[in-house]
Image (cartoon, rainbow, N blue to C red; front, side, top):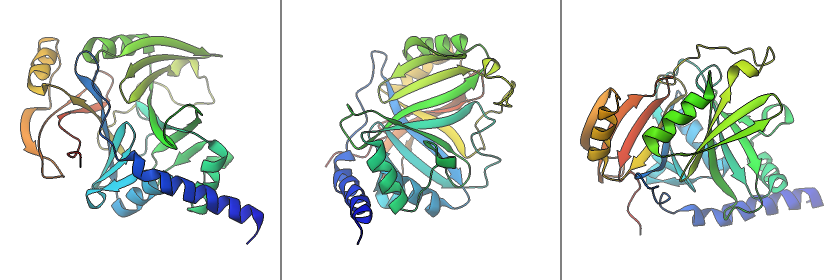
Amino acid sequence: MTIRHRLTSLALCTLILASPRLHAQLLPPNDVGVTMGHLHLTAHDVAGMRDFFVKLGGVSLQDGRLIQFPGVFIMVTQGEPTAGTAGSIVNHIGFKVKNMAASHAAWAAAGLTTEKGSNYFVTPGGVRIEMNEDTTIAHPIEFYHVHMWVDKPQDVQAWYHQMFGSVSSERPTGTLFMYVGDLPGANLTFSDVMRMGPPAGIYPPLAGTKGRALDHIGFDVKNLEAFCKKLEAMGVKFDRPYQKVTNATGSPTAVAFFSDPWGTYIELTEHLAPASK
């Protein structure tokens, strides 16, 4: 075995040995009772999509029904998505890693390769994933952000602040202005698609997420029934009103569905996470 192969194997083993520590509950909610919950993907090859996220660094729970990263669950259901994330309101999602070089070595050893040597992956089915290095995080990999490409991003930022209590800020980078709404477990980033210019090749109106490879994003909410009533009073029209159900883990929960004004399909849940052991 060469030194390079030994280092690659060591990096992979380090991430694998660290992965059980990822088995933790969702982050505590913010002042209005909201925390990041899950991302719901639709795939022709469900097993392949789940395997991709495990190789990325997630932990498979409930026979693969949940793939957990710190801050979020990934759920995958069988279907024929109309398209990937590019061209929709949610252009990509993002994760942070503690050590980018070690992570790239581990991913390569697991058979994963980034897009054209960048820090982006594209999953089978077309979900774009951006990887960012942050040496201060507590785990080898953590969920980071949902990146939306929108017109008038400051309006989208204000809407998420009003509805979900996200903490707003502005983060200009060159000609690409990014507006931020932070929630426990996730950074919501809103980029001005009109400032991206011809290289992006994407202009409004962008497609909604429902029916695509990333079908919807999910927030877990404390006292969901009361929260839904508050949203209705603020003008939200639910596709699927509040109702109690049994989730994939067999535990009682509650759900509600609606789309934001720009086409991001959203599920609200209560008690999404499996019980702690």
